[in-house]
Image 1 (spheres, rainbow, N blue to C red):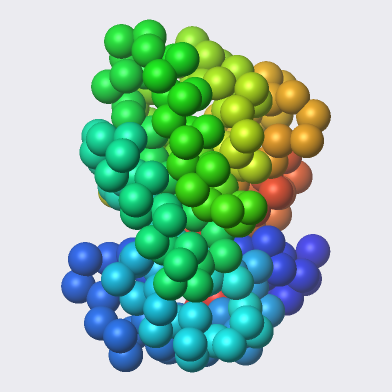
Image 2 (tube, rainbow, N blue to C red):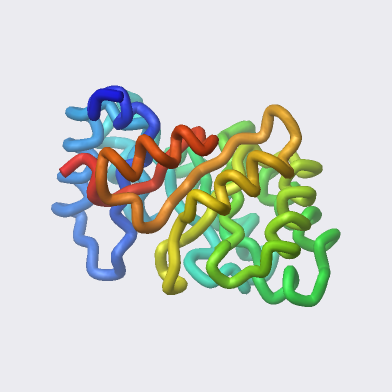
Length: 211
């Protein structure tokens, strides 16, 4: 697969804490120039990015990021504000502690509340695979499968681990038809990208593939 074709599946990402508007604008420019699926940026820059891009490239942002333990009400507010500011896609982080406690119905309720706040925009659910057992991952595939979310996503990239091919294959096996997968964290080469797409990923989060 040619690099340009691969980039159509990539959310070109800049989420580091020190990111400046100049760096975000350059991320947007490169995403636009390279035909990426979107740019994924911090919420504080969504309005500026949306104004800069003028609908030429979807703007993705994150909520409950990176730890996921904010209240549901906080996440709902974050999502609604992001959409109001011009976000086209939302990547939310689940409360991993709830998964550890087996509170899967609470996670389902939270996902659906956030999806409602998205006003029809795409919602991707980050479950932070590096912190979970396979049993917990399978259970969360069931939760996301039952939810109104559009994607399950592997990782924030801030928890010490990223996407693995084994996790993508596990997701594909246990997700219902119609639910999509985003692999993120540690995808740095065209070869990595090809492998993740072949394993079943529909979208890739990366800060380095464009380079």
